[in-house]
Image (cartoon, rainbow, N blue to C red; front, side):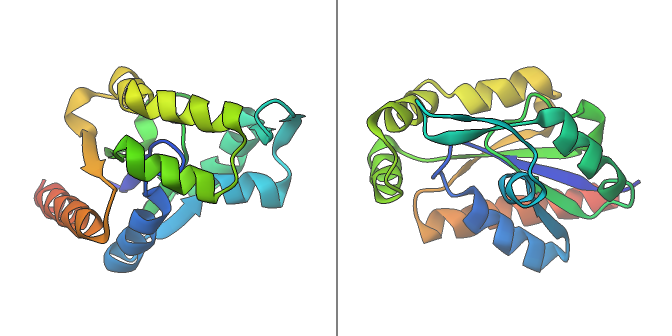
Length: 168
């Protein structure tokens, strides 16, 4: 069976940092959906209020489908409910305490509306709930993303999961 992992979470929670390490350790291909959408122009429009592009999910999924055929992919995006459930054997949701997340988003120069929206998303566990509602609960894992030590702890969780998965 081919293996696919989804890594999701609020922007700034630490997904990319973790994905980079997972890809290197597991020898997987890291598919950063935000980068793919930008590079391939999978953008429907630009949201002026939130100062960000609006993803064309259908175009992204059509692009990813052949890439997902062989396995060994880590898919990263800040939302998860539109990906086919059949694609993933694990969904890792990276979370971050509000103070650290706020500082990260401020450093990215997010406007107040976008910053507040993302903070509320994390406070109310929106992405974690979305993952739990969209995928089987036994494949969804919450991982801390505040510090480098958290990332190392999260990598241990991923490595342990991977070892168990390989034994199946």
